Image (cartoon, rainbow, N blue to C red; front, side):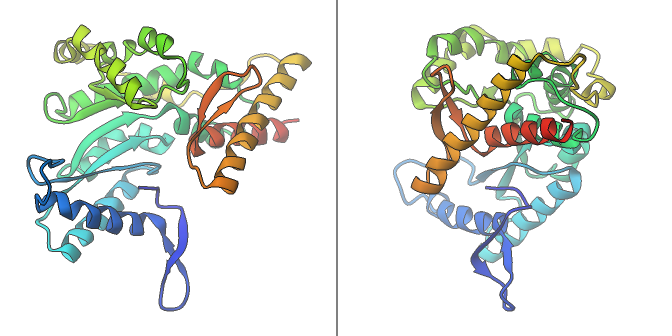
Length: 308
């Protein structure tokens, strides 16, 4: 499902206005899930009769509460019992990160999953501090104070809220679908960081990543992490601004790479209707590109253009 700020003309109101696409998403997803709830097939998705919807791009607890209300109306429409539709909260916006506990409280009867989404979250971070100054290069974002506080705080809040053994705490996507050896070497850090699940770009990647959960005892690791001091919100709010001016070569490289990711993705989206593509960068490394990565590149270009 998409966020609340996208509208579509596939359905319009009586006076011809577009409706939020997320409203349509919820109804279509629930309608599709009815076959599973009725157990008409040999395999069922939920052993307890639930529908699981991960909701992205929610800006804080009020939007989480809106989602819960929409799910409730969908349950009434389809004649389902209350709280059949469970909610996954994508922690992708700064207002959600800083208020994650309240977001979980707003969906306390439905939430089954929280996770960090580094790609969208970076785009929102750049957008939020757009006027504060020029931001660091994309490759340097993971070295900034806010990203560590963001990743740690998501796990801290999930454990504090009682997720261990009851709900999932996730980590973000591996964006290099051809680099499976590197993924196996790198992604074990995620269960070590307290994650019980994570995004991967393919079924093969999922099979390889599953090995990490045999190597790391996640419940024990989560128990250890629950005893550390919680991440400080002050670090979370520290903007990722450049400390020194970049040289002309570095600026040119970053601008070209950002333009390449935008154009490579948009061509396949507009011409072929493909919403997630493997697009080669200027070094011919295939990168998973979708609207989240497009968001980072476009926001960085806008930020650098604004600050000259």
